[in-house]
Amino acid sequence: MVTKGIKSLMVAAFSLFCLHITSPVFAQDHTPVPHESAEAKLDPAKIILEHIQDAHEWHFFTLGDFHASIPLPVILYSPTKGFSVFLSSRFHQGHEIVPYQGYEMTGNKIVATDGTTVYDISISKNVLQMMLALLILVLLMTSIAKKYKTGQGVTSAPKGWQNAMEPVITFIRDEAAKPNLGPKWKKYFPYLLTVFFFILINCLVGLLPGSANVTGNVAFTIVLGVIAFFIILFSTNSHFWGHIFWPPGVPLFVKLILIPIEFASFFIKPAALIIRLFANMIAGHIIILSFVSLIFIFGEMNFFAGWGFSPLSIAFTVFIYFIEILVAFIQAFIFTNLAAVFIGQAFEGGHNDIDGHADPVIL
Amino acid sequence: MSLMTVLAEIQFGYSHMGGAIGAGLAAIGAGIGIGQIGKGAVEAIARQPEASNDIRANMILTAAFVEGVALFAVIAGLLAVLKG
Image 1 (cartoon, chains in turn cyan, red):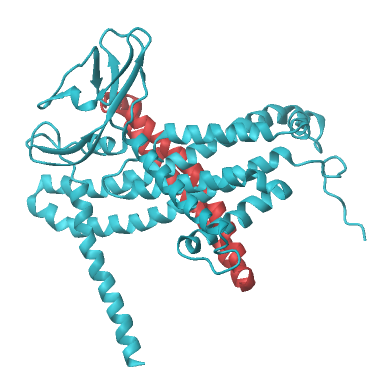
Image 2 (cartoon, chains in turn brown, red):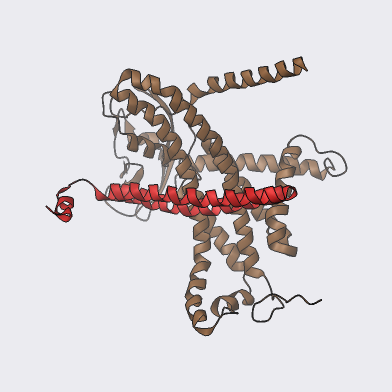
């Protein structure tokens, strides 16, 4: 009994010790250093915006004059000039941003110097991280699928990553797919699993310091929402549209009010999916960045205030990090669950009902 | 001087103030909403502890809905500050 108590005490002490080892890493990688010079005024809003926006180079940190960043390929298409492919480092000469081949970079947008339209399809930071998440997803899933094909996990106990993925996949099947989609759940299950794991892996990788903010980018969530919208659209049947344009079970004047509301809700439901995921992720990133920026804001006022405040700020940041990990799982599951709910609502058939009300209990 | 003239004298950004107040109100709304969800869930678990897994799943789902609505307001506040 005594050794058990000492063992748990040592586990607790060691975990606390590890926690304190990891915190300085966060502060270092989140170092918001102004790009102009070390004497420039601290602008926390600009720093936070820089960290959550997409960029044409992957910037890790800056030590004095040394910028540790990877330039990424810029791929542009202009109807007048055709395709142009070059590294984004061409825009930088020394400390200045110069135009190159008729294009110039303002902020993080690339415009043509003569004002013609240019389509920017570069491999930016977000695109590269999405490719990385895709690679992780495909490698993980194909490796466990291969194991299942040889019978490992079917006729014998699952091994390795099968153990980690199987509860998650059965959770999605039993909580999101089967209750909402009924007998057609197998048709939509690949989509639901893909969207869940893609959002989850992008959220979790985006929490690492130095990574890209993919799920907090509205363009990413808009595409996910549009895909869900089209899947819902292609699953609708005449019964669904009948209910939208002639809602059953309500008096006539309520029907007339409900028709535009029901029609609008068809578009608003995927829009809510988009904004929910985007706002949750970006709010989490901004909170973490703000807590770390607070150290530097205090440090500008007073050298000792900055150092004195850092343990508190780092403690809050670690706390928010744990919440953000939970939020990543929750938001991925909510997106998947709601997508399943909306798809299920789209093809639910006749209720065998009288005027839309459920069957009365008949003994 | 009346309140209107005093307000007109102030030259700072109203949009920043509006955005911040809006985000704060959204936080109040989210707090009240999720608090009610938690209260209902905890009371239901107290009445029937065997159903606690189902209740927990529903609680988390509903809390995500309410938080989504609050975050719409946060986005509106952010837009007011950034674009105002």
